[in-house]
Image 1: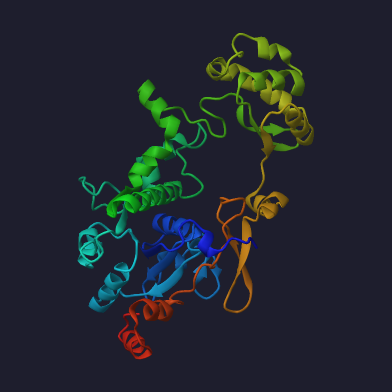
Image 2: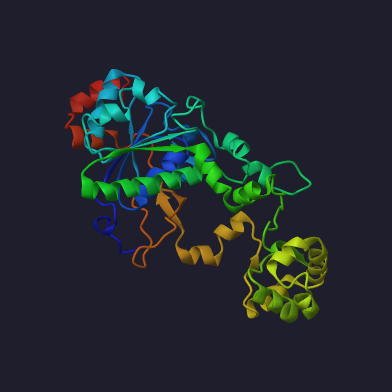
Length: 403
């Protein structure tokens, strides 16, 4: 376990009230927690976060889906439909630096937990709202779901094989990017507050983030005035770049520049004439004439064993790799040595997998200080410490179904 302590993490001392659920919001607050912030996750007393019912069950109240977005947090339960629950949440917000929420448009204001309502009791609050669409636009009230966004932003249409229908990405990329963009904005707001002493309202829309994911595909589509053809495992702009079949299995090949292509032709497949062919000498030419070039490359690679190709490509300093199954990748020596896959304890004493933060600070990966919390496990502790509620107060709230 790394020697990193909580006090040495960048966001130590920052407190976040997490009113979000499902994926984009929880990913944002988890990233803040990874960097040292204290995350208080508010959940419904009975059902908790929706994702506690998604994926595979892990322990009494966890699932694989919930666990992937909720490490380094404490869970408390509040029924925000009750006046008592709303008042408790407002008192907690008054002691927090950041609030993150993704209620349906207008819903959080009805709970008296909107930005304008909370900044009256905490003027320097940094408040992040995550919604499906622009909150000031005509579609503000539409619910936002990753799958719908992948369709409406063109991401599905650019994904998959050219001969097949549009294909969604394997994971919820719009949610994930929105969560990370929200984290960036919150960090910037925290930094700005140090100099100005003022908070602000950050608004994130899934649709906006989905458009950003289109990246160079999107700009190329605007330039040519039509959809960019789907390329499957190939690259729309770089050739050869993608998944190729060797004699005994697939490999990834990424020829990123003209010098690499010359070495690939000469040292790997023994076809130096391809590198000097005027059609293929530059990447722009190779991209334009890919239909003439790729069949030749495919034929040469299919005649060789994968191990030999990978050795030759590595010797020629050309990016390459195996195509591994997900389980194989996560249990590989590379993943284990990196410390990305760790474990946390369950109430029955057994252990479950957890992923660690993907970055290192001063050479050390921030530790998983807390495994994904059981539903409401910190309710009494948090409400007593922050609001000075007694055991009698907590018992009364529990009898009323507020917590």
